[in-house]
Amino acid sequence: MNKTARILSLAALTAFASFGAQADEADASQFATQFQTNRTRAEVASEAATVAATRSQEPAGSRVVTYKSTADRAAVRAQAAEALRTGKIPSGEFSM
Image 1: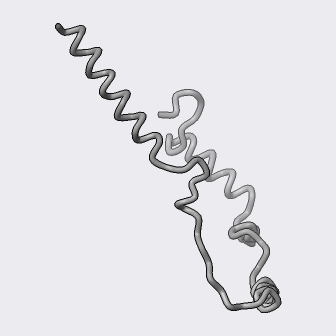
Image 2: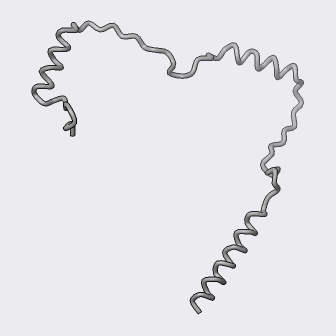
């Protein structure tokens, strides 16, 4: 009884899944966008040329920001050594 119910439920699930898999065309034509336009190719090309001239071709965040430091290298090293000695900076494998 239990085995028969399991087989029947598996068959029902398989049949339901096969109906859902055949719901669309193979090329997904229902998602194709249709455009109706009255502009010529020359108008579109000229607009694209003006937009490209006004936009930057650099990816966002690709410029490196320079910063002029006023700190002395020896002073920074001394502060780092002091922080390491006092335990403010973890060191070695025991860094948790």
